[in-house]
Structure formats: C-alpha cells, structure tokens
Length: 136
Image (tube, rainbow, N blue to C red):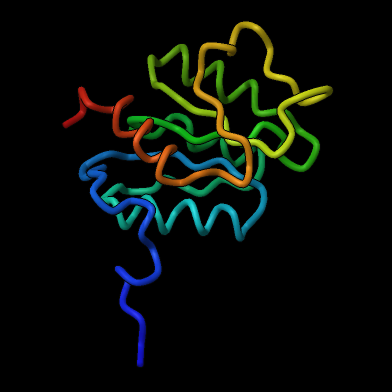
C-alpha cells in the first residue's frame, strides 16, 4: 500500500502558508529536504534551498516573505544573509543544532525566533505563518 503525502508530511497540517515564498538556507541536504517538503505541504513556495553562504547571498535578492536560516553553513556564518534580510524588512528565523559558544547568535539578531535542531516543524511552521500574516 502506497503512502500518500498526507501520511508522510503532517507537521504542516492545519497551517496555511499558501502564497508565501520562503527562503531556506541549510547546509545539510536531508534537513533542507525535510523543511522544504513540510513547507510545500503547507502551501509555501520554497526559494532554494541554499546550501552555502554564496548561494544564500545570491537568493536573498529574490522576492521572499520569510526565511529559515541555519547559523553555520559548512563553517561560514549566516550573518551577512540575516543583515540583508533585515535591511529589506524580511523576517527570518534561525534553525540551528548549536546556537551556543562559537555559533551563538549575536545580540543584534537576538530578537529573531530560534529553533533548536531537531526542529519541531509544526512550531516553526506556525511561527512562519505568524511572521507572514501580512502577505495573506
């Protein structure tokens, strides 16, 4: 018996991200794919995912409603992307397995929501929906 999409991707059940363009910046392909699938299930259009800082900097100029940023991209910090998003007024959340020590979030980004990995996808999707209510 084949499983349908509803049987596999369920974190977004009841969460509507239809019409939202979400930039995903994540260097681990399996994590990025999971985030992308969950967002698509909730109706979002995923920009990326970007696996490197350079890819993220290229995509940050796209039309984006919100972004999910991994802090450490193969040793490069995501701060330049967060700066560009903030300059454009685009909200973002951090999703990181290690947001302490050398990967600590600088104080100028401390107000952004943070999700520790493994991410509770339903909580992150609800936050993304809240951050993009104006785009409805």
